[in-house]
Length: 181
Image 1 (tube, rainbow, N blue to C red):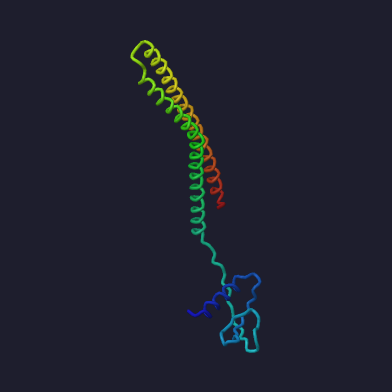
Image 2 (image 1 turned 90 degrees about the vertical axis):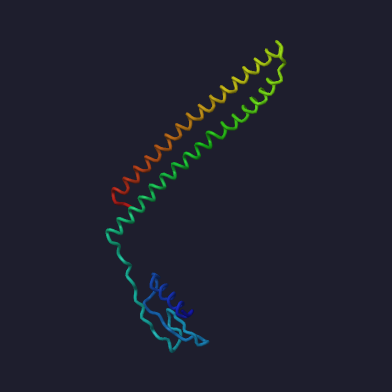
């Protein structure tokens, strides 16, 4: 295909789809002898071309129903993605601080275990080790409590995210029941 043919096609397409385009197109010879297409007469030898407008095809009922099904499916997928994003955000905001705290507690536990292993094998050492074991038990209880609280918060967040999704899905179903894509 030559550049002139492509240019002619583009000019005709632009004119056919333009609101302001008239039905007149002129074919002329340029200064170098090339063919030029224009909306206005571009010389004495301008040749008027006929441009046919094409009517936009109408959609069948099946096509409209198919399009609505695709839109509905896309909207439902968006609701599922929003729920996953909600859960991910909740998980990050709940578990990151808890995991940071637990990391600190675990470092303290490691230090206390090292100190307990160095306790002397005598009454003073036994008393010291018992104190360390009490501290270890307290830290382990704190870790368990923090995890339990985080899990409870995450369960509430899961419920909230699921409720949001159900509300979105109900709105989507209502929208497409009415036949409004």
